Image (cartoon, rainbow, N blue to C red; front, top):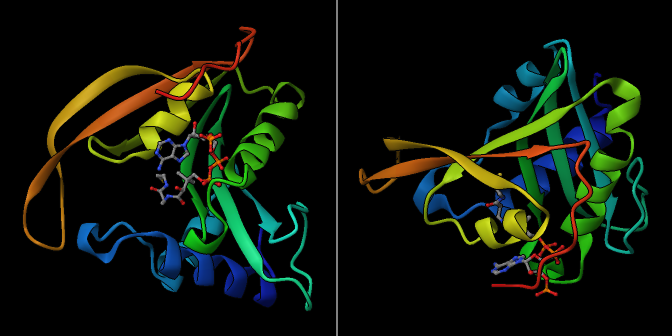
Length: 166
Ligand SMILES: CC(C)(COP(=O)(O)OP(=O)(O)OC[C@H]1O[C@@H](n2cnc3c(N)ncnc32)[C@H](O)[C@@H]1OP(=O)(O)O)[C@@H](O)C(=O)NCCC(=O)NCCS
């Protein structure tokens, strides 16, 4: 799924605003463009009005996700929302979009990996992801500090009740 120029620009602008540079987690444009060439990679973008689709020239891009599917497993490689538009339910809408058409494309399990102290864990747990792994000292931050990585999974044929925030 190859993005257009405006799509790349929109995703890069969210990437640069959303990820704290202390952790070195943002991808650069070359990494993003290369990832898009790998089969099974897909993305979706959301604008500041909560509309999912290609970027509009008049409404800023607020968030996006990027996944990669291999057979019946899909990895959520990135999900990010510009800090200006957080806690408005935009990442939830993106995740619901991802989950809504997962059965059609044959995804049975959705995985993700994140830095152990990332507050995004609350978001993932709320949407039914369970921790299935821990990799000690997996990430090295821009400050040189090593941090653990947690792997989460969600089995997609389960009906998940929305959990209250923890
Ligand atoms: C994680 C992230 C995508 C959430 O985006 P968002 O649009 O603010 O999320 P939503 O508004 O849909 O949040 C839904 C629920 O998730 C939980 N949640 C989201 N962010 C949270 C946070 N920082 N702390 C605690 N709970 C959080 C809450 O339960 C929230 O519901 P509430 O606002 O009613 O309490 C966003 O904070 C982000 O871009 N973070 C930086 C990038 C990143 O680390 N991505 C994940 C690894 S790739």
